[in-house]
Amino acid sequence: MDGFNLDNYIRKVPNFPKMGILFYDITSILSTPTAYRYCIDKMIELYRNKNIDAVAAIEARGFLFAASFAYCMNIPIIPIRKKGKLPGVTLSKKYALEYGSAEIEVHRADVPKSKRVLLTDDLIATGGTLNAARSILIEGGAEVPEIFGIVGLPFLDYQKILEHTPVTTLINYDNE
Ligand code: AMP
Image (cartoon, rainbow, N blue to C red):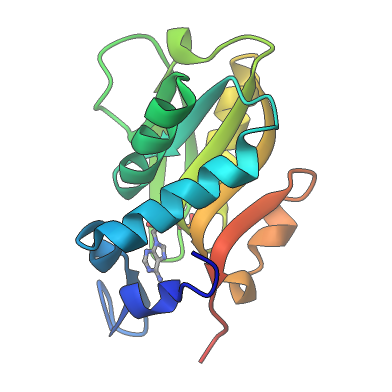
């Protein structure tokens, strides 16, 4: 699959969901099995030898990649959800988004103590969501040795907020 051009499957939608935002739509990856398999295969290639015990993913698009990865690796999925969606005892954190603000939660009982959790999302913009997710996982006693995103927008400086944790993305976009 070397030479596969993932960019062909990421639609750039200007002014969505708000004026001034260029939205990177990954639904063409989902509707194209070769593109989807490319992403999951890459995740497995990147992390199969890194002693990953569980994968955490951000609602909702993050789940679509983490679930297949977890199935292939035979590891648990830790869903990180928007506030108010999880019925059990949760750890939560408020954070700023590229557009607006939000709060995320995880079931406290899902966070495995002293285990290595790969934290994932579909796209990393400011890194605010993943930073908040990382902090609730760590608060719950897990280790977060690596962060993964399909798409990265490094011009929004996510490397700074996520420093101390290696971040890998399959494709990056510059500010155009
Ligand atoms: P952030 O916390 O700024 O890194 O935002 C990451 C979350 O918001 C991810 O779950 C993305 O799916 C979504 N997101 C933020 N900016 C964009 C964008 N320009 N295009 C698509 N999704 C985005």
